[in-house]
Image: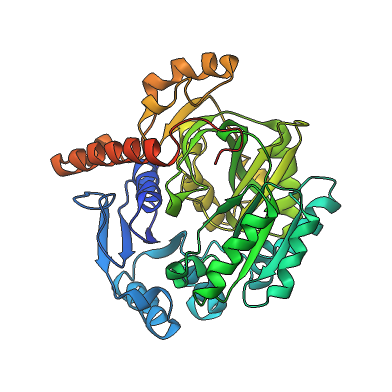
Amino acid sequence: MPTPKILPVAFGSDVADYSIARLFHETFGVKTLAIAQFMRGPVDNSKIVDVRLVPRETFYDPKVLLPLFHEIADEFPDLTPVLLGNEDNVLNIAMAHRDELEPRWFLPLSDRSVLDLANNKDAMAELITGLGYSVPRHVNVDIASATTWDAIVDLRAPLIAKPTIGGDQVRFRRTGLQKVATFDSHATAREYFTRIADAGGQMSLVVQELIPGDDTTQWVINGYVNRHGEITAIGTGQVLLGIHEPSLIGNAGIIYVRENAQLIEQAARIVHDVGLRGFFSMDAKYDARDSEPYWLDLNPRIGRGNYYLKVGGINLAKALLDDMAGLSLADSGRQTLQHEGMFALMPKLLARPHYIADPQLWERVKPLRRNAVDPLDYPADRHPKRTLFRIASGINHLRRTRTYYPKLTHTGF
């Protein structure tokens, strides 16, 4: 395949950004420019990533970020910069100034109204249930207004709570606000609200009924929608073990890459009705009580574990390039999973019966461990310090899993 005249630009320096860089390098032989607030192990000592360090406010201030966009376009006049990554603030600023940035940049983004819909829990619940699918029952709680807390009595415990605005987790970290908090009862939920309020917290929370089931009842769905509104790539993976470290909870650590036709069909309808464009990542969980899938999140971005699709034969970089060329679904075709596999951001030895209680599932995934794919272990980007980083990262995952999720639970928490 000829090398396209593109410059992948990822905003961030974690494993998700390196995974994107690896995908584009494997596919087209191009290097990625990573715009980072600080250096991290995933991109350090890399031959496929050029890192440019910028002040922290760059990701949040349009007056700083927009000149950077223009600077990059000026610096690489023969290439088309492509905006990649999972930084919501960067994506939102770029989308708001789309007319200014295009056509020098390629922005695989939805319009603001679409993103607002995707980020609105109430609107998304109405849309999804209107299609005949299921979502966890939820209410909105304003920590600064105790009168809103009584709404949780309409929900069945156990409960789960998370900030309505993802950035609030960092902004109000000192109040004790967690990315995801779980409660066995309404009383413990109210105690949590009280602690945050007393510490000066002022934010909105989404409180949901917790769907029972261990990590293996969770699934991830990722794909790409072209400018014509057509899904040109979509695939699924069953989570074998999530990352239970508090700051990363909700992210998959080990994924059994395999097709789930039911979720693909439902996801395609949801994505179409929302009107998404570009990359998307979704999460669903099967209720152990009735085997019904419940839709948890829809994110208009590529997702942290995006490389699992490549393990199964789906190439999101190709989907993006086809879109840049203006190809329709009739021209490019739809990429679907070609084979099963295992994707592992954490040591593959954690994929074992201790966390996989279903003996039939264990028998299916056991032979896949031998060829499990770690996105950081890229043969074309070997360096002694990168090897040491991967070893250290694996040890940390083992230690943190032992600390935060020492044994399987019926809720996954």
